Image (tube, rainbow, N blue to C red):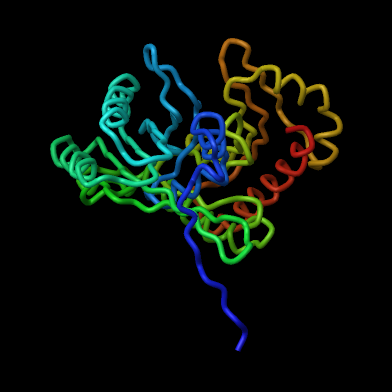
Length: 308
């Protein structure tokens, strides 16, 4: 029998992240790492800002639920929980009007577990508090591996549409379309390698990360125009848009098609768009539409990758 290694916990988190603000927060804000925390709490998280201002203080990470309106704050603590951080957590939640509050710690003391449980039991169902411990492990001389363990969370917390919410026919079709699209797309090994699954919703759009919170690929189904849209959505960086525009010919040659370049000078965001007229209500045509989406998304990521 092949010998097995022994799983060993690394107790001192600061051997990997010496400083919370300078090391751990930048690490956690990266897409691949925030997705580990997102999976643990059962949310899809898009990082909006790090060290985001709240009066005279800064919350470690200010984020949002991908494809939804819920705002998220994440407070990090590479030590045991304490009253100071609990107070900051509530202050930041108030200052940012947060819907989801995540406290990431080395170790949760019993009194603070009880405090988070109490908050969840005495706030309405639109607010959720999570208390998560960071665990580091290694096997022999292997690189450390991280795991987030949820210690406290809201009762009956769910990402699903609330049962008492009425969903109209248009919303139901959007939801069914996204479910079918993901079922189709993630059977493609190249697509599955380049993109992570998203939670289907009743929204007309679905966002896919491409390595940074500053931009993402968005896919939209515009039912009133019977149109599919794939775009590189740049949040608040006109310099990035213009640097990409300077390489327009090379990017479009690599992708294999032309884009509609929309700087949108009157807005913070910019968009680089491809559109296609389709029959969204015709389910027999969905596979063709999904194949087009998969092809365009992959080519878009390849075309822009060199310049992002």
